[in-house]
Image (cartoon, rainbow, N blue to C red; front, side):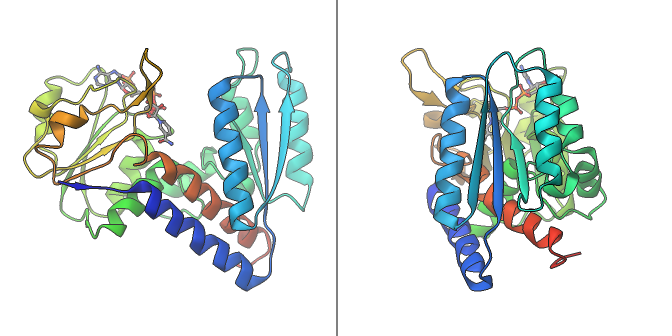
Length: 281
Ligand code: NDP
């Protein structure tokens, strides 16, 4: 089994972004909004700022209190939409319950939507006209490319149908000519469906959910899950120790799919800059 090294690949992607920014003599800008004080969100925002600084992207942080109203948040997004010096806008999810996630996503200018959550960008993705990429799924495609794993003609099974991971992963896999099945909590005989996969993507959010009996010999297994165990350690959706005996390639958690999300976010910020400055269609 070959371990897929997300740290190495993410560094390669971020270095390419950094080099392009230096070569073009530009300074893209990413605005990150954090509402409330969820500790996990704080860690994600800090990591995003660190990656920006590595790549030569200016980062702005807006930390709003937990009790922020939806109108207040939408007013800030409106201001950032209009600010020509801001190229990317990201509101760290989840937001507190008084704020509608959908209202936030709808408000962000699609040209600045570096998370690729806006309906316009989701539509572009499914019609093959995407410019900004869904970060976590595009990160997984970059992992496959790095290891010369071509999805064309392969059977890809994705467990999970969220708007953030499962569905956009299906669109990307389809665009690369895989035969795609998307599973969810109502799927019958999940193990048998998973076992048909040449490429199995686990995006469920349940520790060690994918067991060895669900994996075909020689399958490529991408584990998106990030689960915190009672002892504080991180664990994926795949039973790593058992599945590593069957998979040909496998992502560890942490250090597999996780680091790729931020790398693609950096790519998207550069793309957003180029879109807004007429450098791309
Ligand atoms: P969601 O909770 O939004 O979606 C989970 C999906 O899993 C749903 O489609 C659900 O089905 C499905 N599911 C739940 N239970 C079962 C079951 N018993 N059998 C089959 N399917 C099931 O999660 P996300 O997609 O946002 O995230 C998934 C995991 O990936 C999480 O651990 C998250 O932390 C991680 N993650 C990691 C990222 C990264 O690496 N950077 C980025 C984003 C997420 P149904 O729709 O029917 O409810």
